[in-house]
Amino acid sequence: MLYEPTPGLSTGRNRVVCAARGQYIAITDPDIAPEPGWLQTFVDAIEEEKVFAVGGCTTVQYPGGQTVALTKALREYHGAVEQPKNSSQKSLMV
Image (cartoon, rainbow, N blue to C red; front, side, top):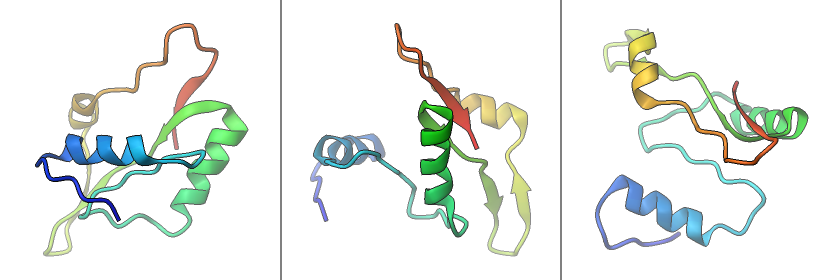
């Protein structure tokens, strides 16, 4: 467990990324409930497709039980991952 005294989502994530020592980094939010097997799916995608980053589909589930997939406009708002310059690797959405 790490403690980051400076508030902010990006600050906390940056702290974790800097402290990471493994081969991969997986980040979720406290209000996220990943599907069973999600992490293995991402690892498989990275290794099979030879990509540098993967992401998944986000579905919003409201307390009343209503489930809504993000619209194309909202997905585009979050932006695509840019491929590093001079890299033969690509990004992949699974």
